[in-house]
Structure formats: C-alpha cells, structure tokens
Amino acid sequence: MHITNIMFRKRRRAVSTILGTIIFIGIMFTSIIPMMLVMKQADTIYTQKVHQMEIRDEEGVKEDINVYVYPYQNGTELGVKVENIGNVPITVVRVWLNGESFEVNEVVSAASDELFGPYTVSSMQDGTTVDAKIVTERGNVFYCISGSLTWYESEGWSTTSLGICVIIHNTAGGEFQITLKNCSDDSTYLIYESHSKEWADVIASTPVDDPGSYEMIVKVKKGSNWKDVPGSPVPADITYPDGPPFIMIWIQGK
Image 1 (cartoon, rainbow, N blue to C red):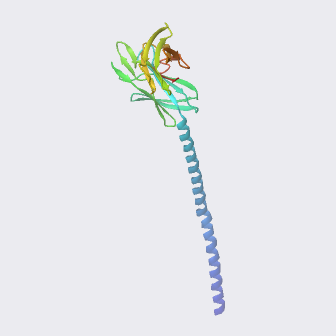
Image 2: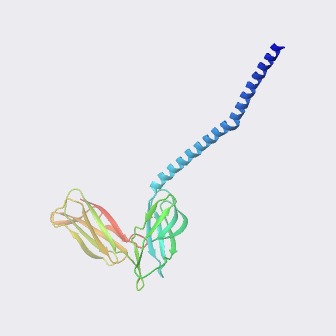
Image 3: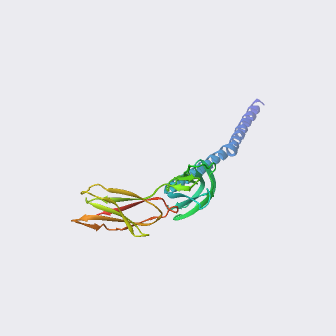
C-alpha cells in the first residue's frame, strides 16, 4: 500500500510537470510571440518612415524655385509668381507677405510656373514695404528675388531700381569696354571702359529706367581697336514684374 501511494504521487508530479510545460508554451504563444511580431512590425514601419524621410530630404534638396511679387494694376492687391526651375514637382502650402500668411495647396510642376493671389496686405499705410516668401510641403522656404514693394498713397506701388550687371571672366588679361543699348530706340550708353590692362574679372552694373529689351555690347581692345568679344552683344531683357528687376550677365572675355 505504501509503495502504491509513492508511485501515484510520482505519477501526479509527472503530470503536473507536463501540464506546467504546456501552460508555459501556451503563455509564450499567446503573449510573447505576438509581442515579438508587433515589435517586428513596428521596426518595419519605422524603417519605411526613415526611408520616406530620406527620399523627402533628397527631393527637398532638389527643389529650386524663383519667387516674384508684383502689383495688380488697380488697388493694393499683390500677386505672387512661383517659377519651378528644378526637376521635381513642388507643392506650395503657404504664401507669406510680411508677417501675414495665406494657406494654399497648389502643385507646381517642374519647369513651369503658377500665379497666386490676388492678396491684400492688412494694415497698409503710406510707405509700407512688403516682402514675400513661400513655403513648400517639404519645408523649404524661398524668398522673393524681385525685391521688396513699397506702397505710396500718392503713387501706388514702387519697386526697387531696375538694373543690369555684367561680369566679364577675364582669364587672359585685357582692356574692356561695356555699352548698354536700349533696343526700343537704339540709344547707347557707355557704362564701363578700362584705362589699362586688367587681370581680374571685370564687374560693371547700370540702372535702367523701364522694363524692356536691352543689349550689353562687350568689346576687348585689340591693338588700337575695340573688337566684340564672342557672344556680344548679349540680350538683356528686363521683364519685371514677370521677372526679376535686376539681372546678371556672364560673358567670357577674350
């Protein structure tokens, strides 16, 4: 009888061990493994998000935009032109005029432009100057390259001075002459002339009175004569407000 009780207790211990193992495996399958799957899924989502952010940052670097602000013909309203000169489409989400923002959601395709507005800046007073900028969906901020606009009650909107800047890459040394030609009336105006041989790059700028078609005639001295450098005359069209009020021209001096 005693031996039978001992064997029965051993049998119960064995059954208990098996049951405990089964319960442990059940707990593992119902809690630990699902938790591991959830963690794995979270890692996958995180990796995807990191990859998306890397792509977004890479595309953000490729964004290249020109922003212009211009007045409408009547009143105090302003328009903002966004010119996408990059190779990726951009989404404009906000237009800023001074400290006032205007919500937008407009896609500007690569190598195209869009007009935004008209906008009215609040608290306009005589002499108020307005600066413009835009914000893209990728978080980039682009400022207006056409300068500020100032409102005068007696005159309306006024922009910064219109002008042209010429840069001559002077790699071999020389004497140069730069003349501005107004294509509307063929009038010319000498804006720069060397008095001796120069070795550094030549930089000269001049204001113009009105938007229109101009030419920069660049000559180099050969002996006692002035000869056009290759590429001269250079077209210099001021198209403000559809373009910047101040343009740059580069030409090789030979």
